[in-house]
Image (cartoon, rainbow over all chains, first blue to last red):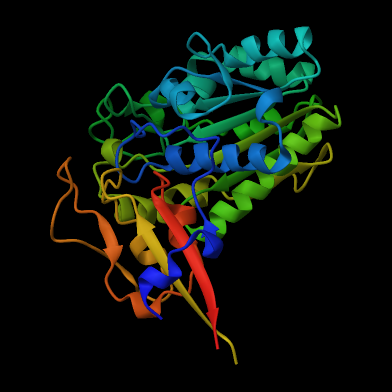
Length: 260
Length: 75
């Protein structure tokens, strides 16, 4: 059968969701942010929540998320997205509220807001993109940077004695009683994307049932910051990031899956 | 047995040529073109369209969401 005969509307299997705008994404080629944006929007599309959702964009590469997500969005000051989301959710408890934050935003400048929002058990969803580096400002060392990883501000690799240990913020907030669902996913292969989408769906369903805070970390690549081509950056992520940041659910139904 | 045949359409001008879709394709259908688009990226295209099964793996991993997938059953 000719390709032209297959390409017809009745044979359509997959196309970009209408909840993503037609703007060209401002991210580097191969960046996991685009996939993460899309799976969140696909989840909202499938749940029919477009008109009931308010997103909070962070500061960082994804600061322009409101240009790409076709829903109501607020852009918060650096690190303050969980605090803004708390205010939105408390004034409009009927709305679905999520924050979309990177590791420089959530795990560095916004640590206090993140930990206290999680500890209070605010009924919001936090999506956390962890690529172990400050991407937008030029690849400086972040709290989540791995030991020995070379960045613009750690050119000889991260030295634990002088620069401290990498922060596993997801495991940290999983200990807090306010969090109901905590999971770590990735978006580098089709199967990982499908699993991540399921985790995000579960997170929004928990918010629907007012059970508490749901937190999904997505381990992602930063090929510009890591100075690698996209496919090699994904491989580097599998080889180096996943042993330190293992994928899977950390807390389900308010119970830790395995004590770490 | 019914055979499944698929096809993809890549939005050439929005494709950034990141190549993430190439290893995601189980039947090695996708390659990057020698030509470039308006931004200078080598866009992805169907190099051997006969192999496509319309599994939509490439579209799912595409960070920029530029791939649309079609599928038909042929007997």
